[in-house]
Every structure is written in C-alpha cells, then in structure tokens.
Length: 165
Image (cartoon, rainbow, N blue to C red; front, side, top):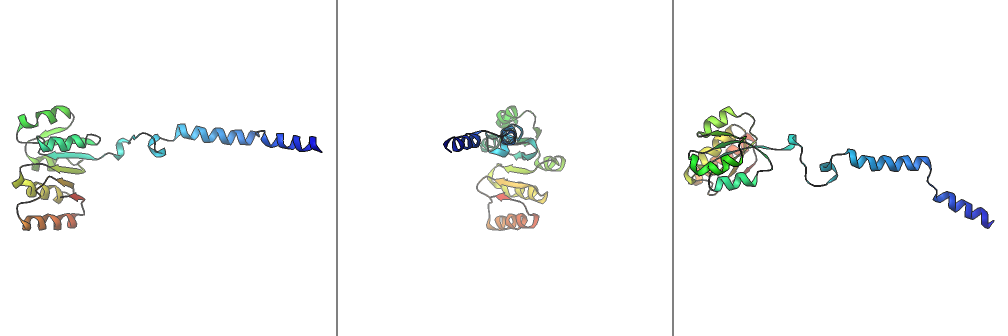
C-alpha cells in the first residue's frame, strides 16, 4: 500500500505532454507579444505617437519642444532663425516655417501645437490652431485680457480640442 501511494505521488509530480506544451506556449507568448503590451520598457509604436508642431521654437518654445522629443516633431515655426537655430538643428526632419498660419494651412498631419510666442500673441496663435481642430499647449500668460481667455475657452469647447492653457 505504501508503494502504491509513493507511485501515485511520483506520477503527480511528472509533467504530462499536455502540461509541457501549455507551459512552452505561455513562455513563447512573452517573446511574441510586443513589450509595450506587457508593460516592459516603454516602446511606443510609431502609430501611437503624436505629430507635434511648435509656434515659437526658440527660448521657452525650444524647451517645450525638447520635452516632447519622444513624439514626432513635424513642424517648427519661428520668426527668428538665430534664436531657434538649436531647436532647428536638433529636429532636422521637422519642416521649418516663419509664418504659423502657413504652417497650419500646409501641415495637415499636425495633432497638437505648442504656442510659445511673445506673450501678446499667445491668443492669436492658439485660436488659429484650435480653429483647425489642433490640440494646444500655451505658455503662460495665456492671454492679455479676460475677453481673450473666454474666447479661447469657448473655441476649445466648440472644436472639442484638448488644451493646457
């Protein structure tokens, strides 16, 4: 009787062919499934990256663009080539513009816009981007007047865009 119990315990510990194949399939799944699905080191597929444009690429704008360097920087706009030279050099694939209106009209692939222009032009640039249904990040101060701030808030609601203003 003791021998029969011992044999049963040994059989319980043995792995069946079905158990082995199931375990091997589970291990293989970890090599087939992309890392970002399993929570491994951050590897974002290109299709999940935002296409970012910047209006005002020198100074604070350059810092904002650098903070988004993990995304696709597709367009940079600045009226001062010297001030924006460092940002232009760091993102050579981005198209360069001097007029943000032309950039917004021509670049249909833009998902979001960073506005880091001189303070008195924030509202104009942000409104132009929102009217084209682009999400917007605006450096502070948002506007010069309460009226401009209210107009931007209404535009964000109307065009259903995400903003950080």
